[in-house]
Amino acid sequence: RGGAGTKKPRLPEVYSLALSPDGTRIAVGIDDGSLVMMEAAAQGEWRQRWKEKRHARDLKSLAFSPDGAVVASAADDALCLLWPAEGGEPSEVAQPAFRWHNFVTPAPKRRGKPLPKTAAWRCVLMAEGSSSGASLFGALNHAAGVGHVLRAAVPRGGSGARVERWAKVTPNRLTALALSADGALLAAGTNEGELHVLQASSLARLVRLQEHPMYVAVLVLTERDAAGGYAAISCSTNEVKVTRLPKERLVPPTLSADRLLLLLAL
Image (cartoon, rainbow, N blue to C red; front, side):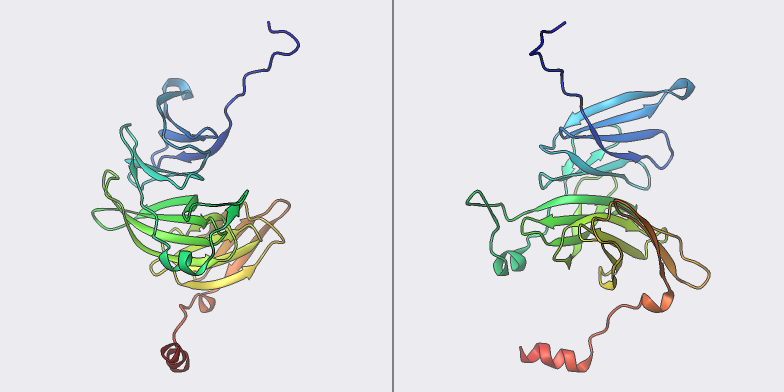
């Protein structure tokens, strides 16, 4: 037993969880950057399959691939890693270059020193992709505070992921991400209570709504209804809101002739 000045050992905190599609494994993200893979054992118990630490910061988000063979981990250390669910070496998902954003946006500073011109991964999702693999959707917050989303193609096994498309969504930070069951819509919540709905294939923004006064903590998109619409369920610190998204509001933006001439003139 320690003396009066003895500090109790700090217990690790769980920051994220993901359940495998077949329900036999749980990926657990710890605040020290560790990823723990648990698997179902006899009599309803769970046992640790493996544990690795490759992140320097807490794991903000985890997601299994649809076949359960790969798990993605995202953290504030600018890393998104793809792990074999059976254990083994992870591979990294490269960030977009952000060349134009870095060119027009002054580098933010902390204590007088410029911050790295990279983004912190906030959320990851995985969904059915092509016949040769899966699609990964990610929410990233640039050091300057701008929220982006991306879509990457993930081959079977996880290695060799390739970013296919990325887009700036908001000048605020993204805090939540959701994908519709049919893979058609992607929704993102922000620290300012915004709800952005995008077309998953092009990442074009369809709807922007101010649904909460502050931070969107949890976001879910329902299945498409009989009329072709959806609903978004968003949770903030003190409220839950259901937002109807009728089919007629989910129309991709078009570039009119006047806007095209203006862009060419510029």
